[in-house]
Amino acid sequence: MSLSRSDVENIAHLARLAITEAEATAYAGSLSRILGLVEQLDQADVSAIEPMAHPLAGQVQRLREDEVTSIDAHEKYQRNAARVEAGLYLVPKVIE
Amino acid sequence: MSELHTQTLSALAAGLKAKKFSSVELTRHFLNRIEKFNGELNAYITVTPDQALQQAAAADALLASGRGGPLAGLPLAHKDIFCTDGVLTTCGSKMLSNFVAPYDATVVNLLKQAGMVMLGKTNMDEFAMGSSNETSYFGAVKNPWNLNKVPGGSSGGSAAAVAARIAPAATGTDTGGSIRQPAALTSLTGIKPTYGRVSRYGMIAFASSLDQGGVMCLSAEDAALMLQAMSGFDPQDSTSVDTPVPDYTATLNQPLKGLKIGLLKEFFEQGLSPENAKPVRDALAVYEKLGAQLVEVSLPNLPLSVPTYYVVAPAECSSNLSRFDGVRFGYRCEAPRDLLDLYKRSRSEGFGSEVKRRIMTGTYVLSAGYYDAYYLRAQKVRRLITDDFANAFKQVDVLMGPTSPTPAFDIGAKVDDPVTMYLNDIYTIGANLAGLPAMSIPCGFLDELPVGLQIIGGHFAEAKLLNVAHMYQQATDWHKRIPTRYA
Image (tube, rainbow over all chains, first blue to last red; front, side, top):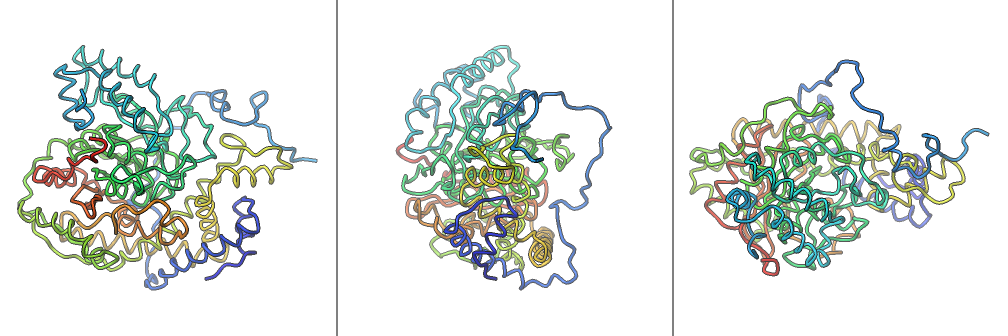
């Protein structure tokens, strides 16, 4: 599988990354080599195999009581935000 | 007190208890060494001397009252992937270069409760994506055994800090070998526990079905002490396993007579030179003398570990790293035109090139039309590999082989080709895919560079691994070697 520069530009858009043309060309090369490595997976016969998402068999997601377990610490958390006002995160205008 | 830094945690703990020195003196000794050597090694991103001395004074008070546990007053360093309340937590990235964690990771909290003293936060590959510690926004880390060589990665700062004795022990994380490979390349004892054994809460996520925290230190005994304090069920981590933690130190000295060791046929056949295999084979001969029996085992799907990993890990990474959007935390670009521009430029300027490569790989293998061919297929091969391990553990108690295909390589040697870099993890990735506990212990040298022996166990067999490693360390002294410059 070989990726073109425009394939990479499309992937970058999906991943919300801005890349230059030169970067797209370079990534097309390295991503194609990675996909070449990954093609080894075609050797395996997986016709009757269930996909495995979790390394420990039989683990189930636990449930807990529906009660408040954390305290309101938004002021502390928002200290790491670039722009905050009145307890809200600020972003560029999204509604015209 | 010049010899303090050459001692294991166990020996230092005995010294504290016997009042030969205080935790404040011990902490000062390590802080002085950090001041002296960190410039050339680049092992720490952040050093926290004031906080360390306060914690040391508190530990001294605890020890004086006779209430200190086995780790009280002992210094350590945390990989900068673990959140530390009020302390910069960068994950080796420009993206988090201004992030002050608002809470402690469970691992950090447990070791704090045990009375350990944090010296600082160690350098690492950006978001733990790398095998050489060259992808860090804060620069490459140097290998204390040869400053022109890489220390391995991604826990390269932790490895260099302990190997140069500017920390007596450190935490690490291992998604595809990031504890074991750097431990091998710097002559340390490193353990990655079973998936779910150590809480991932507050450990910045890379690939959530593979990530596991662990220890890098000077002996199996030290690893047992620290792992004891770090392990256990945590309701804050939804994949934490609620299984009792055995007493890891109680079984360290069990004789190995009758132990069945499986030699991983594929490991010795794939990418391992005879010179590099020799220290590993010598170690196996030591185990035979200790009464163990060597059996060759084959895991036919194991050679597919690397391609499987480089689908599964990037897929999970692309999902996990979507949280970095320039809004709630992390780097934000200047003067965004609109929301899309804010996302795209913040991420492009905040992430380094290897992280972007993995995000894009993951985005591609999860995208419509390619999901079945890549991601689903990789998840199926992951099961084949896991089943191979399960079959092997029906015949043998532990598996052994090399940790890394070569000793430490030159800084810069592999940065231009990601696939060559990825193949460094050829022996370590299998244990992550199967969620198995695995260790690397020092077993010799090649061209004056350390070589590691890898030991892999069944799920929750940490006590057995530590016992097997400890008995080897009672019979050999590779783990006591110190780079001359840092002795």
